[in-house]
Length: 374
Ligand code: SF4
Ligand code: SF4
Image 1: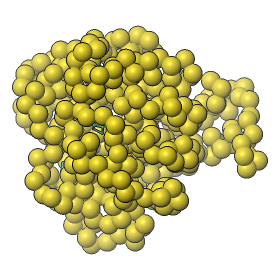
Image 2: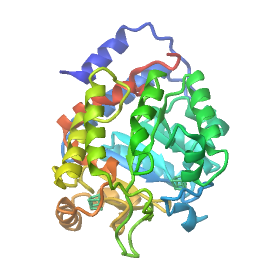
Image 3: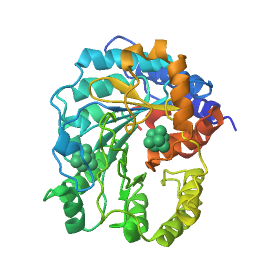
């Protein structure tokens, strides 16, 4: 036990060069301060620990299972507003943050936002593979750059993204980021379309020491026009029909994980998925607005993107202990409207002990405790 203290101990024993950063503080000091603050937050109950911030509604792709590109919005919060929001999330206890969109790197100020976020949180930046090399300097201190690759077959991937050349660009991006020692990981979205390929994709990248995390194709069933953000689009080709194959996939991944620490999904999540597909049984209760929250490009905040917004990021501190939030939490706790994998993972690991399991399983790959030059 004592994952955090182990890491801090290892870190203090490493011969790490200190690097001067702008405001005169050493890079190492900053890393240690960030690490200890994150450790304290992760172990403190009754706080939100995970946030997804969809910082833009702009996208340059046209993925067949996604609504975002059809419903783009040029409006978004200013740089200063996003930074102010990040400060609030830090005070609220957020440990890790996912910056997504749209493609978050399409924002002109993406570099500034990412650097600010990476100083305070375990930060993951999503990219469809088209933008990371254009903003590479901003990604050097990020914990994970998640590149979406859905197939090892070029034609298949380009079909899913509906953009010719998408596969070549994404593969080149992964390779270049890896060479540049940037923490790149690959995130295939599991669907009926690539279900039988997931093991091959996993082995291909993890054999090259590139971690793999998964999304699960899901679509927004809510017809509520007030839902925060429409992402998943119903597409018959992608809906998983062969449930037994999905069960088998979970079993194989659980087995592979015994000797492969680059598969970034916990056994607990895999077992939950297994139950869902073998018995249609949900073994978790949703922790939306309790352990995790979602913010859109305009700063509106909800338990998840399928729900209407309940406040905005700037009012979060005064709303956190409100009656309204407590009643929403009860409703979400029994909700079974979606199977988005990240929400399942945040719900299953929604306690300080759960955070420790993620730390053991997942964050050890993060740049959190490592020097810049490793
Ligand atoms: S899945 Fe991502 S890259 Fe594809 S259209 Fe949607 S937001 Fe854009
Ligand atoms: S199960 Fe949770 S994450 Fe999914 S729609 Fe319901 S409240 Fe949102």
